[in-house]
Length: 238
Image (cartoon, rainbow, N blue to C red; front, side, top):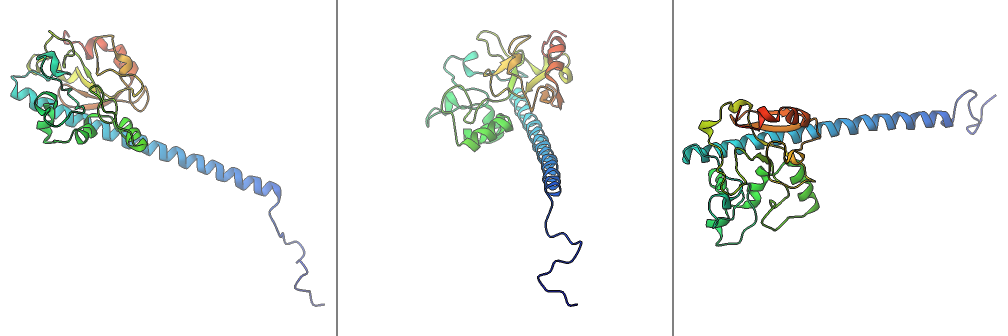
């Protein structure tokens, strides 16, 4: 007997069962979660690598400045040494004609004239990316154009009027003295000092903080590491 073209072949399924469909959806969900986690991990790793590179560049600029100033490191704020200066080490907005008083001296060593370009070095990648993605820029004398910069060790780069910055030649253990770290985008402050301002330090998370040491090498530490070793890593009296 010839089968009709409309007669289903015995035993052949014509559609997915509900259980099969739910199984497929579950598998796709699991695979999606794995892919998202992998992408997030890759993004975090790229951010960390970028920040370590930036910190290395900044340390090089600070070193060049020190060579031209008998070993003295730059202040956080130009007003520390001279009240007529208004620059911040990381570069803030200023108007044309204010270059002499408002331009960060480190910009000259970087051979950069645009403060926005300089901020792409002095501001952590995540802070920078968030601000640029949102299309926002700050225009004031405190933050960089794209948010909070890396934070510094105040005992090396002074933020206190009357207290000079450190001198490279007098650092007893440069390879174990922090110069600068990643910053917490939610807590403003240009630096840390002894046990103060440590909440300004940040990174991908508390377990992944990029740092650069006074001798120029970079590494990744935890916030707990910094707090536990504050007397050895931040203080000059080692």
